[in-house]
Length: 207
Image (cartoon, rainbow, N blue to C red; front, side, top):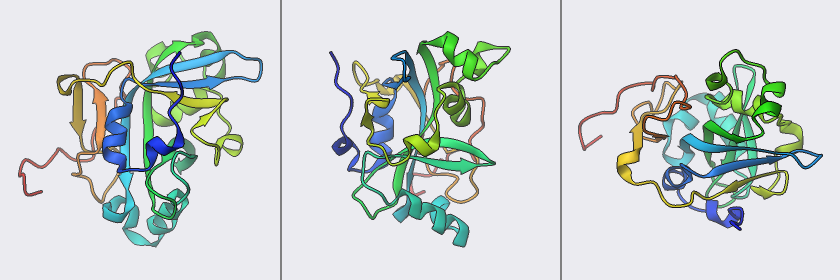
């Protein structure tokens, strides 16, 4: 049986950590024991020491400090009033994280639809706030918990995804650092979010 990823797995650079999470499984276990699971099909990395998206302006600098917690700890970032699920990376005191942006539902679809009724199933978990609601996550209960907590944990992919299966783009919804290639999706997967990258990747190797 596959063991959940331990907090130590997240001690390093969030960019390769994010890439390696593609194809893994996010597991939510409800109080009654029911499992809600989804394949991770889209992620983004934030690495504040070198990331203008974190440090541009006092507001973002203050918010990025929320990530400076022990690696392998769950946290939530609020965007437009909605909670987004992240896991802290790098050593404590350094602001860095991986944002889980979209899931392909595997187990517990009926319960997910109860938590978040939608007309089209594909809209259930194809976005970072959508998946939080579909899994019935309460940020107050999850924030600060280790990434291998029984109620919410990550399983590694059965095998690393080859490069030809991975699409690399700029991130979504940011003004600064918009060309950094730190968003990873499973190419062609229908559960990837419909969001457009903030800017096309720069073609110049120098950038």
